[in-house]
Amino acid sequence: MSELSLGDVVDRMLKRREQWLKEEGMKIRDYENSRLFHGGVKHVLKHFKNQHMSSDTEERLKPIWHESDLEATDAITALIHQGVDVKELNGVAALHYAAHNGHTNVVSLLLERGTDVDKCQYQGCSSHFDNGWTALHYAARDGSMDVISLLLECGADIAAKNENGKTALHYAAENGHTEVISWLLEQGADVGGKNYRDKTALHYAARNGNTDGISLLLERGADMDALDFVRLDSIRYMKLQL
Image 1 (cartoon, rainbow, N blue to C red):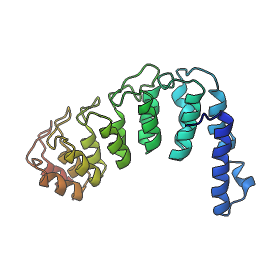
Image 2: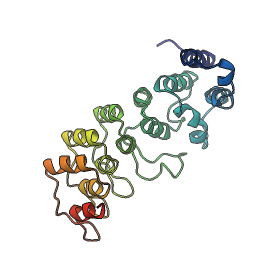
Image 3: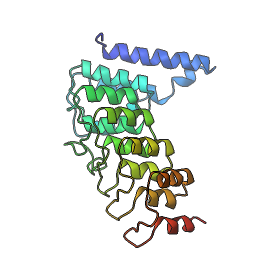
Image 4: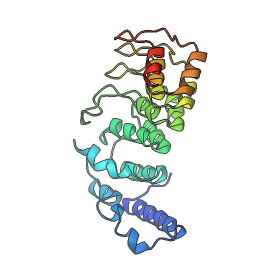
């Protein structure tokens, strides 16, 4: 990979966006009033030139995550080529944001640079990330299949629990991501695993009326009679949806 300067990356990102705008029939002057020209990615890259990351890195990196996977990858790559170590870049927060936004290439890049695929607490991260969540939790919650596959290939702990005792399977069921549920189960997720309130994935699927998820979980052996901490089973949760 050839070394990219910050200027090269900014120019590439702007040219890409300009071409897209032309294809969409938008006027360039309208685009020049957009966020990218007013404190967006260009500002982020300039700010971090030859600098170490500070405790507010997470906030300053936010514009990057609103870009496409390709553009975000370029931006992170440029920072790395400027000598910024991903650990100083608050790699865990970056990994979480990348997973949350479905940036598969960025996730791959960060993992290649040594970010711990299962690390959930990291000095400098905000309390939002200091809570047991891993990148797999975010990817499962948001239904990012490509990211989930990559994380599991890189050894992510499919049984990892956050501060509520919820696993990736719980979040996939809660948010109606049937394809993700199926994939996680194929990869060894515990269909009957409970969180700290004794809720299973079936409880969450039932509570949210996820009929496809309910059917799939039952096919894979979920216990419809399992009780949570208030002694409710999944059937009761389904009735509450009626």
